[in-house]
Length: 315
View 1: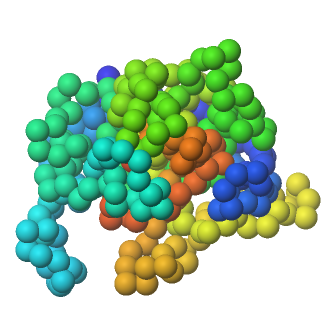
View 2: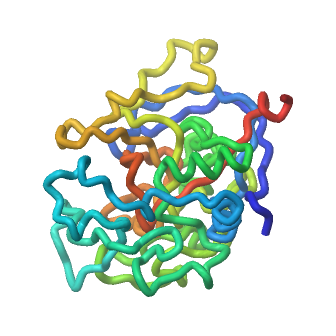
């Protein structure tokens, strides 16, 4: 496997971004134009990220001790390297409280994605996780690539299917076929039927590609984009000729969580859903789906893929 994923060249075009039929942050649908670009056929894998680390000596955010000045009220034992890990519960829980299945885990990092005792040595072809936005950016810079905008990512995920609910069409399981690595069964976050064969991440490319030949644009891991979070999309252009070209969403200040003003950390858009997306809780393994993610926080279900824009390819 090469140091960076194979890139698939896409001709740009106009498409209808977002959804008016699912979660409010996906609305309103609006016309957007994107230029030509290439995008990774898969998310960046553990093996590919390991080559980057060996070549550069890079230390991810999750591997760095926390600065006591930034967390003055935190106990000393919490100021150690670590990250957030999904922990299944013993039974049904109130789904309004994510803290019941997400655990701050000292020692968790891209090398040990589920904490001490775990390892990626036997997962070379799984998507790298526990990488925050800074880590994804560092890898992209090293590889001579970039992180996708939200519009580029969604255009690629749709695979040429205008307005389809999923990356493969409108039917959840066409012909009964499982199309993505998501949570199997209705009992999130405690009982998993393992129909897909995976409880956590799957090797990249194990599920069908979309119409553009891109794998895992739904499920497996959420993926970083380079756009600041906004709580809704902009209104639609008055006509197709006025659709914005290669738009960038939001700004740092607008991305902050107004419900938690004590946290002044910006949030970027992540796309695609993950292996933890359950229809009963998080029907977000769709191209229009979007969530905010604090830029300094890696998690065991968040990875990334890279792009190269036509201007860069010509330069």
